[in-house]
Length: 112
Image (cartoon, rainbow, N blue to C red; front, side, top):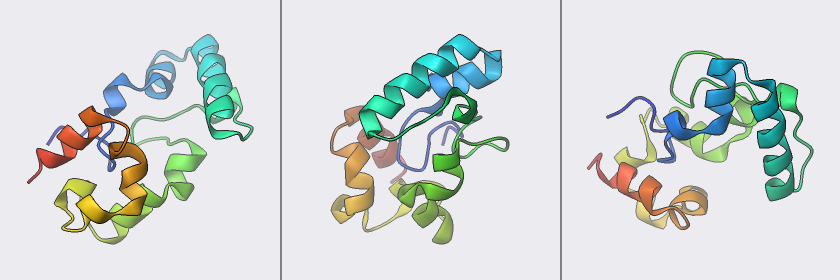
C-alpha cells in the first residue's frame, strides 16, 4: 500500500498541510489553519500546520500526533491502516471519514 495513505484512508500526498510543510509555504499554512479552524470549530494556528503524513516519519500536526482517535486505534492494534481491521465497516471512528469520502473508503478497501 502507498505509504501516503493515512490510517483513515485519506491521501496525505494531496493534503495541503503536507504540501505546506514540504514547501515551507507560510501562506498555505495560514489558509489551511483558517479552513481547519472553521471546519472543526477550534483554533488552529499556522504554526500547527506541519505534517509529513500520518504514516510517514517526521513531523505531525498536534491532532495527528496525539489526538486522532483513528490513528491511535490503528497504531494500538498494529494495523497499517483501518483497512486491515475486521471491524472497519462498523467502526464509528473511521466512519467520520469514510462515510463522507468515497476515495478514502476505496483506499481502505484496497487493503483487503
